[in-house]
Length: 137
Ligand SMILES: CC(C)(COP(=O)(O)OP(=O)(O)OC[C@H]1O[C@@H](n2cnc3c(N)ncnc32)[C@H](O)[C@@H]1OP(=O)(O)O)[C@@H](O)C(=O)NCCC(=O)NCCS
Figure: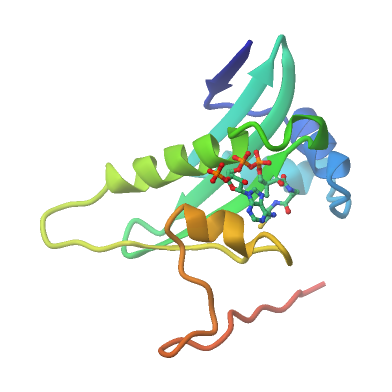
């Protein structure tokens, strides 16, 4: 049976990253990222962590949704959708009178439609340019 909880170990996080072919990050960097997330959700099947998502928020108007991962053996069952919906709900619960908060996601190639179904708007569009990023090493 699938259950959802609000914690995630470094090992389970790194194993999930590996399961979808994402690059290695060191345990201490992974731990720091998890420690400083505002909201984490993980999906567990009989003790095995099979999905995760996390969000961090500047306590103002910007929040970033990161590391939405479902183990390939469990994809297509609504787990990703449920976890993103819970992250959105977390942000909704932070709203105060007159506030708006923008949730940003940098979608992996081919995953845009997954996020569009959840209410995200793809870029570039008539108003916004493409998202941009850079790595520092
Ligand atoms: C993207 C990912 C998180 C989706 O998780 P999932 O649990 O398989 O997705 P769900 O079963 O919750 O799908 C929810 C809906 O999105 C649709 N969907 C899922 N992946 C999709 C895709 N790549 N393209 C279009 N639609 C997609 C489903 O068909 C479903 O539609 P429905 O609600 O109309 O039935 C998962 O494929 C994954 O972990 N991929 C590898 C890591 C990754 O790239 N993460 C995204 C980083 S930005």
